[in-house]
Amino acid sequence: MAKIGIIGAGTWGTALAVLLNNNGHEVMIWSIIPEEVEMLRTKRQHEKKLPGVILAPNIDVTGDLEDAMTDKDILVLAVPSPFTRSTAHSMRAFCKEGQKIVDVAKGVEEKTLMTLSQIIEEEIPQADVAVLSGPSHAEEVGKCIPTTCVVGAHSRETAEYLQNIFMSKVFRVYTTPDMLGMELGGALKNVIALAAGTADGLGYGDNTKAALITRGITEIGRLGKKMGAQMETFYGLSGIGDLIVTCASKHSRNRKAGYLIGQGYTMEEAMKEVQMVVEGVYSARAARELAEKYEVEMPIITEVNRVLFEGKSAAEAVMDLMLRDKKVETPMLPWENA
Image (cartoon, rainbow, N blue to C red; front, side, top):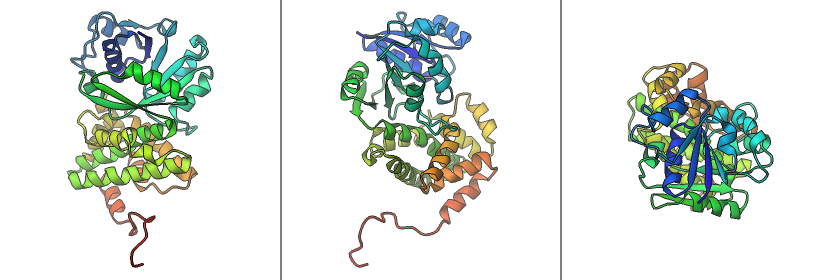
């Protein structure tokens, strides 16, 4: 049995608390929001955001960060990506040497273009930081619906240790050393999901969504490879797997926000309607800046930014994507008769 502190009591943190408690571990959840602490202590569930996912009586809930971190074998950092740096900064004072921290949020910081694990390592240099990612909606994990994820770490020892902690009959975990590829796939798929949702909001069909998913993973992989990630990662669970579920699922907040934008909502109106952090909006600018920095063509990412931040209509963005210059899909393959 491990002692685990869940730092962040949103839907994902809550669902993972249920999973880890079911696995026989001692779990404590921390929230910075007093009302959330009180709700989880008394109601034992997120009534609006995650109804029906009940916290067992032996899962403690606290508003004291030091209490949540003290004497813990593992810390699961589950705050939304815009709050990763500030939360990690607050954690540093209570973090022991070699503390295992598993980041489960997805994003790229706009100002620095750093992944979340890089931010945590900068703020808490004494920590052993890992990443858990993959196609895993909190609504399903919390209800013990079979799910498969990947854990990435700097060492095989840490990855396999965490694999054993999280793995169960309903939650299968693979390992990988490619943390960068995992995090880029997890962050940038949220931007593509905004595009997929927008297409749904415009009334387009499955053909359009399939095109966005397949060309989207091509864009993500192209950038990732240039940055030093492994292409195989983008064909796996944290790449195409996460992209499919985020673009297609009714649970996806990024897809829902995109859908509303396709219906005519502004970005601000869509985010207010979703009532949760839409991480694709925060990652979109960073994605475009990464594309420019590494000189990688990412037309879908570019058009999403124009719709979100430059007032371009969604329908016009789709038309411009369709009317781009003609391309070869697989330029690396030779023709039999050139």
